[in-house]
Image (cartoon, rainbow, N blue to C red; front, side):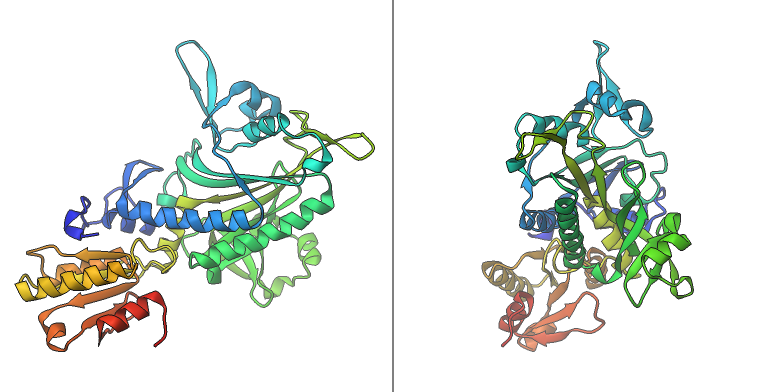
Length: 418
């Protein structure tokens, strides 16, 4: 993409109403546009990042046997009354129309997925089953103050698993733990993310959160660095420590952002809708369930929050909007022609390139914008690089670049060795 054609622009000043680094950098870089507290629109650069995160999650959900669906945002009030959450869930958006009918704007989809499956499954032979979607959710969040980390409208991957036995559920639950670890590793924050023992709330006695270490995190966790086991502050007790074979004196207190969670739902949502199965003897049993969530916008914001430096964003290669930021320095015909040749060659090789072909922009401004946008490789074409018969290549997180040939640039970006 030619940057001169990109309708968004970078901003030097920080938004006056943002205190979080993730939202500040994403807005300044033109990745997102803030509509109101907790609500953001994704612009071209931000959407490219979001889609890459989405595809990583989709690949890992498909690997464990997930079937993707897209369920309705508007949910019948009667379904929520059956589960008792129409009154009990205090952050539920309730919407009425002129006829007096009320519906819920989906914050989660147990009340939809269970009635759907009741129409299709009944025998033990239909199980196990894993259903997931990637879709907008709505929650009446009163503390929408952490940028992308806490929203009122947000995109979430929610998976629901259905089982005939506790053993089958536990086996899949373990697979999902591994799948989540893989996802967070692939998006570049695996080294900072811990599977954390947490309270199960209304679902079960315990659950697991995936917490990413950062000083600005809203949660407090205690980490045993030797074993990699972490415990949320809310469930820190002698009973839990003994169960996990942890010593209190070896735990390190950390602040963290929750980037995912997994729950044992048991029969909490299957029972109200009588979702059941018949076994080999023809006897009826309630279906056991689990649920597994990841907020995509929160994950995107967390990556920015924990990996950025004082110059701007540093995107991991796996989710960067482009692989290479190509800068043409100088408005002379020689530089422009050479930069255009490099752009076309890289694009032909299948490399995603943002080409800063803007005229009448100083080298300092282009370098500053490149640091802010955080694309993994910066390639500079200038009269100096042309004189040295190459292109200046620098990784975003490195201080110094070097002159390389177009062939070497291509091999480096594609991860090929000479």
